[in-house]
Length: 95
Image (cartoon, rainbow, N blue to C red; front, side, top):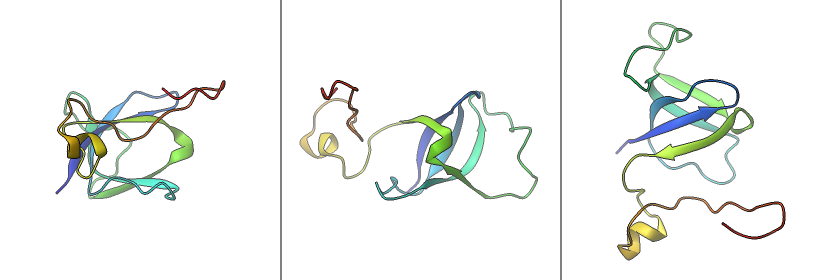
């Protein structure tokens, strides 16, 4: 089952795509399918016929998930919202 995500690249406009699974923490890239602008229009830099796109994490600021994340602790407990990753500030406090 694919999940829709909004990908925010550093210095570029965000776009929408689908992921087949949540990335593993050891992954160096994320694989997306059906990428498009947030308004649904085609991205100008995508080649006709391309079906999958690999983006390295070094180019990504953050990724928003749309809907429930399968297997996440929040989804399993029935709590409201979705948590995928914890973020840490430079002072070491967890957000």
